[in-house]
Length: 242
Image (cartoon, rainbow, N blue to C red; front, top):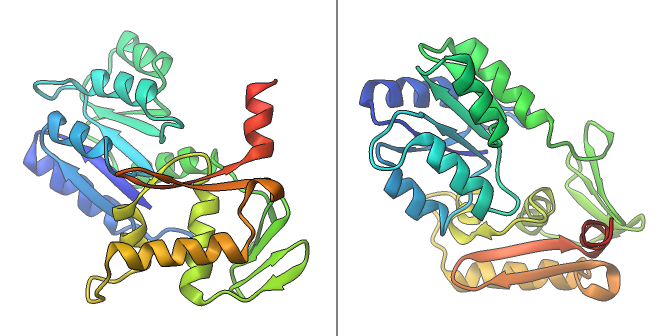
């Protein structure tokens, strides 16, 4: 879980980062929080990096949190969930932000336990079909997260652990471009040496092993200068021809 946080108050920013990073996600990992004290820098990073969730303070200088919300909903497809966390708590502000696409609206000063609970509610709306707690199914491809085994139509596919984790990450993020930095942070430790070619090789292998080609209903494509994107042709067709 990679979270972008925008707030121009240093104390608030640090308090929020600590509250989120001390929270353990269901997969026992901790969120990765990337903090921003000014909106132009966040805007620049959003153009080239991937975030699973964005938290915005409305009252920041240069580009307001509300304007950032509008940009996110207009230019990122699909847009990640956005939580407004602000001292502006008037009803018309809440309604304005929610109508603009905010997934949640929380007033300051925030209560850490409530913030985590509301964040959890937002994330639960992005559901993945589960056979049980350890198995995720995407069309004809199944991931057993306990045994670390991927299958196509019930037939196991020989993947290394890193290939398995990369494939699962791509499927969980299908329909949106995932930046190279996002993939690196999730799959390689800081102590490991890696290069662009390493990631390209892993992408090539999972594309080949899982048959992520149009004939089998999937397209794993390169997003030039950014990263990679996995699409289900079935989902795309349904969206284009409702």
